[in-house]
Length: 147
Picture: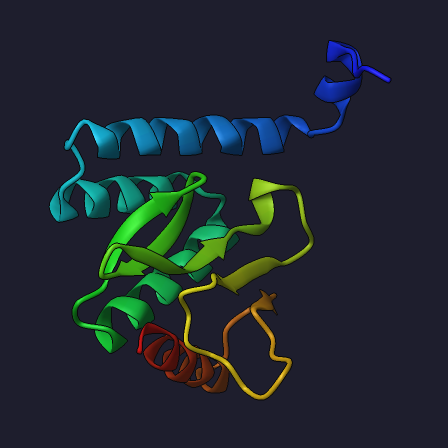
């Protein structure tokens, strides 16, 4: 059975296709050697500034927490979302609710994150808002995740 373009096209939402295009652009930029820490940080902050007010407020807080808690972190975009790398490996990201029209934002952790806890552990956390306790939990998670 062969898939038609129509079938393949409907397999992804417009938002998912846009995220894949953003990732492609990010990878091309990295390969050309045009991605320095200052450039990546500027791009991330510009992307945060474009977000709807509630997502922007959450993303700004997550950004502040991650960059304060992990001094050698490299802020960057990953699929068009704010993300953070250590030693070239993206270990966590912030997915705004508006990115895929979800009801909550997500703080997610990728494979390099050192959050292992037995044989099963969470790798993503839904965020509706941030309390001081939530902010402290994020701080603990990113410090542990970054190693």
